Image 1 (cartoon, rainbow, N blue to C red):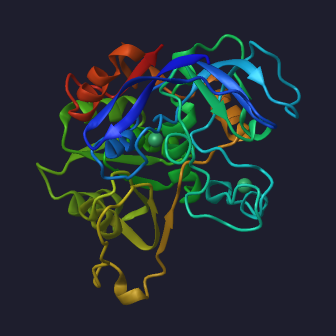
Image 2: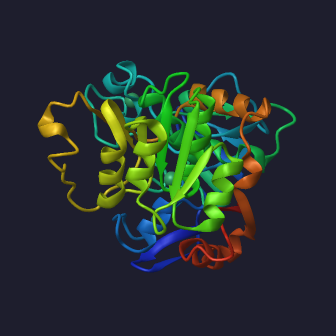
Image 3: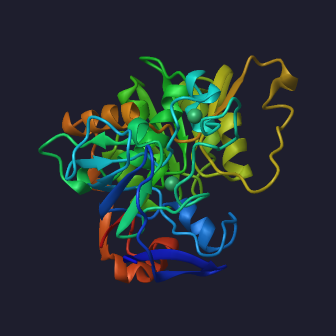
Length: 355
Ligand SMILES: [Zn+2]
Ligand SMILES: [Zn+2]
């Protein structure tokens, strides 16, 4: 049997390299030889045991690679094609997918499954490995335009897609004022996305000076350090009463509440965070339920058409991806990469991992 190196969840606190069988594609599947991948904040939750996955699972959900093998029924692709695959791999054919909610994909069935579209490194083996098996390949393989490097498209599978979705699902309009709570990799992409969507004022909020500097370069007009000032009061002062859209990009009750308090009546709270505790709605900020507020949540949009659009944004130089890939590691060194990334040392934003 052929084997490969892969980063495997072994126990709480331990993701490390193991030799595992190299998968073979079945009907509708493709085998990708991974050329570059990265680590997501969600992988750190998995490492810490805060998001449970089974022992022995290959982790990672942001693949860039080349097609190494194609199963029966996958058409329009050739061996050697350079592709990316979204972190979310919808089937494209179930009720959820065909009703416009592909991230909640029911896997070819006749229903919806909450978070069902997220399979890589969650319910099936992921891509922090030499090879990854792609389900529903016809719906998910996105060819990389010639001229773009691996690192240039590495942010597309997850953080660009997720960050941009906050502005899209929050219906940011030309001329809007938008506040983005937290300027980690996802929040920075949300900042860039709000700018792209036409906001005339983008306010980035964090406490780390380096991240606030990057936020300015990625599209924030104003940055606020919540450790130094009353952010909600300053947002209300800057906007004359509150932003049109506030984006939550951390997953903490405090940032959720800050976002809610900073929107104007009739405004939108667009939430990207992954929450691990109960949320409460403060009665005054919620206008007792009569403030015409909208609260939307989003899971990263996936599928090949989404990836095509995001890669075109990169190709058109509309997205400053170079701010985000700050460190590089080999797959064999992935434990060191997790250590750096999870402790946010050396100003790390995202790491590029190459086999
Ligand atoms: Zn992720
Ligand atoms: Zn589906």
